[in-house]
Image 1 (cartoon, rainbow, N blue to C red):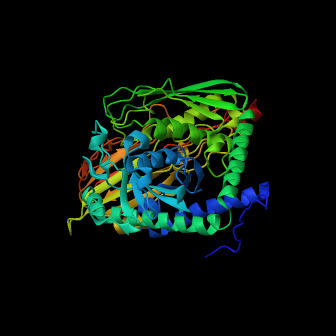
Image 2 (image 1 turned 90 degrees about the horizontal axis):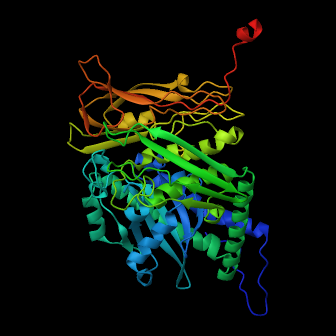
Image 3 (image 1 turned 120 degrees about the horizontal axis):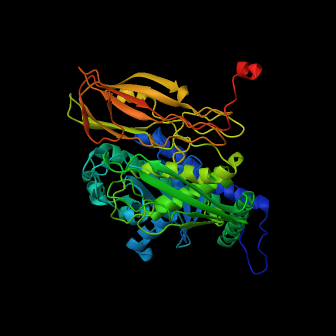
Length: 555
């Protein structure tokens, strides 16, 4: 549908229209409407429940200079910082002069992506009068991209090359036509070709929709010169909003530390995490110099996917939670991350379970400030991905299947409210879980029970949010994979509040009376009738718990 607002053509005789706050907001909402519509279309057309239910994706518009213009509100928050660098790397690999209108290309190279390889960015350039003015980017989690284990994630992986295939500007569509041999190669590198093909086609369709909507809602309304001024206006406004928010945080240097259970493999030592934040006027520095060195187990993340994204996510939550993300809101933020740490690892380092570190590290940034100013931030949240994956081959057909889910837990209380829950971690945002009805309909699983784990919330003047307890029965022989942590250093309270109870996973095999701990396992074989008990952590409490009424009366 064409716009009713004809594009204003500037001439030497007609001075450019002034750009005011109203016009800038119209522009900002026009661009966010593009990514929001793509997001809705993606959830309507994707094959995998990871996308259409779990919402493990993001949609963004990146300008020709690779700066982020806007990002969809329903996106995974941990994708906020590195869409532009991925597009830049892919374009450099292809060659800018080789791109044509209608091209769609893929990227997940570990050297820039910095997260597990399952996060595939699907990108297309937007041309105006023969030149690229922007790119549509849709990043989504593909259920399996090869590697040594189903889901492409394995606690046994010691390098990224055991975790699947890497794409670095691979063009799957050229000038509007799908490239058959490229598509066949993608399908050959996954255990789930139907799911991957369906999700990729949804991403491609979203890219095409984005190009069309940009032309209708943006290019048809404003000239290139007007767009430059509108973007400059937005950049200045976002930067000032970010700096003004930082000025509300008292100056100082704030530090915090906590401990992961281990490096992802039983028998390895606990991993100590540390962050330092410096506030000086309208500038915030997040320093990861105290983080441990990268490890041989797959809990690493790269600098962009790890340190930069963690810092940007925490900054946005603290300073501008309600404004759609763009590049300039982070002008007040600087990130210090020396190479080869747990959150700035090399391209070759294994990253399959990179998600074990960022939720807690975002929490640590809040804790650092909260230790001095607890009224500004919440207590600790459940702080781990709480991942439980089931895989197998159907007894009736031999078809491979996989069911991937991460479970919500409790969020920390604040000075004004009890903690909420269950929700996914900070890096997930408020994306939902997969409905029980869908899990039971699609997979040989039965959910025996699910309940709120209210007792998991830490006590305090304000109580921490609840976790959950779920018991899942295996209806066929299958394999279990889990990713739980923070059991020895549970979600902390603030201002005298008590910590929440940690999460845990246990397995009961048929014929046994013993529940066996399974917090981090790969390919644990379950017999028909085995039970998996999943408990997620609660959030920390805020403030000293109030004494019971009878105690006060007695005093």
